[in-house]
Image (cartoon, rainbow over all chains, first blue to last red; front, top):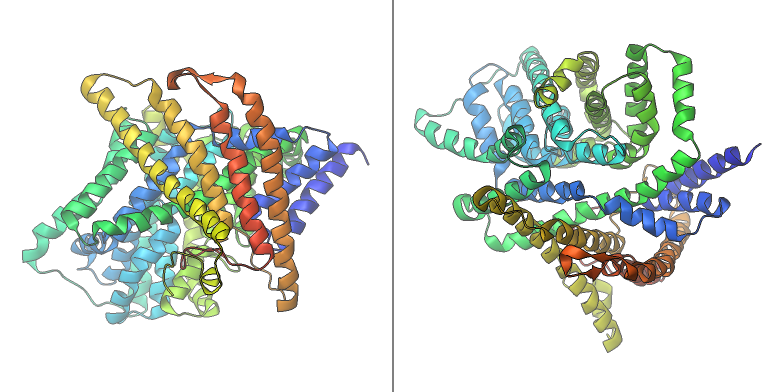
Amino acid sequence: MDHTTIEIIVLTTTFIGLMLIRVPISLCIVASTLSVFLMENFGLELISHKMIDGLNTYALLTIPFFILAGQIMGEGGLAKRLIRFALLGFGRFPGGLAMVNCLACLLFGNISGSASADMASVGTVMIPQMVKKGYSKEFATSLTISASVQGVVVPPSHNLILYALAYGAAAPSINALFLAGVFPGLVICAILMTAGALLAVKNGYTVKETIPKGEYGKIIFDGIFSIMPCVIILGGIFSGWFTATEAGAIACLYAFIITFFFYKDIPIKDFWPIILKTLRICSLVFFLMSASAAFSYVLTILRIPEMITQLLLGISSNPLILLFIIACLLILLSAPMDMAPLIMIMTPILKPVILSMHVDPIHFGIIMMLSLGIGLTIPPHGAVLFIGCALTDTPIGKAVQSMLPFYLILFICLMVIVYIPQLSLFLPHLIR
Amino acid sequence: MEDSKEPAQIQKKEVNWVFSLLLSIDKAFEELSKIMLLTMIVIVCFQVFARKLFSYTPTWSLDVTIFLLIWFSFLGIAMGFRERIHLAFTSIHFSDNANFYIEKLISIFEIVFSLILIVYGTKLTLNDFGQIIPTMGNLPIAYRTLAVPVSGVLILFYGIFQFFGVDLKRHKGLGGH
């Protein structure tokens, strides 16, 4: 065995071994990197240096900004307003609440950019409302779980930012990735809405919910102001007025003013705990970022990405088949693992594969988000599935059972996104 | 108990002044990182408005935000260790007995990691006194790099207490594993 092979074995065994005994994943990444550094006789300053390098990016600021904006809006009763807004449009149809649920998740995702926030906020309001109208608890829960997946695809998904940062040299811009998420988000929403309504009608949930005419004005007004951060982000990027990072800061400012001075659902003293929650998410994302910077350096010197490329190209050289295999692989990997570490680890590994297949990295970013997003709904480690089950006291087994048709629907969505690259690429190409 | 100001286990004991000093330093760092986040938002917003309204782009804004970002991130990383919120693979369940030793082992890993940050972070900081950030009044880059050993010291502090089974968490209900 040559030196490199031994190093690769040490790297993977350290990583997997430590991960299995619950050492935080970022620390596993550091430890396995460290083992290779020691074997290669590198100075260990390099680790601290690489860790700083990983965080020394202006674009990284986008993450805390969008998380904070989403948190402020979310705590300030965003879900409630968006649901009323969606009810106005779709509550009148049979199975309408199912459609409302999907649309509300899309809109909420457009502000928070996170699937778990989507599930927690929309689910808290929407599921009891659906149950009250005769929907079964399991159906309502599994519908919300699947609809929340939209949150990781649509802008301002902070996982997309992680993808851009993990991609390294010649990465697609965050602006382009955000724009790329728009149409796939809409298509997934359309598919989910149709399927959700059909399933609801099939199960006999046909109660309609209409809103009195007198409230129309207020609901539309509230709705428009609630989705304004998304308009600021996309409008700002599209018109070239500001970058994604600047859009994040402006969105925070907007969210702060509208929540604490106009809606006033929560008192201003709640602002401090909201910052703390943002700090919490940033803490784990940033550790991951800095640890992965050192890790991807090791991956490169061990030439692991090239090996994986050879391996995958050995299976097939047809990009259509390979993309299918990669998407399935990502879903499988994301079942036991969290999304963010997978993005940081798999992106540099898969980068040469997609480049050699001439797949646009922007398109691949969206595929990766959706595949890993589906992983959030799969046991044993689906974060969104767990939140959903915890919200409604549904046993995981029962939830998975009622999720089965939705897994199929989500998979169909994924295939649509994989095989129609124009959906992801139309808007980003427009601004080039 | 809801969001407690000081760690629960400590409250019960006779608290000596060294310990309470350490805890207030820890608390100060946490408040500092919140303020840094707000400052970054204000700077970036200012940058946008200055550019759009007065066609003026401040030269310092980028470097100052990066400076704050690095400090914010490393203090955040340290806080993550205290609150035990860093993502871990929790799908496998161990017996209580095994858990006890695993927790100790994890603390040891954290301590080793913190020592690396302290030792090599300090080396890096000392090296960085030569380089300066011109837009920030020629401040040496070392003050930015200093975030690494400082977060190392914090992690060491949390790691040692965790090893002896003292729960330093300040915030209940912050989630995590």
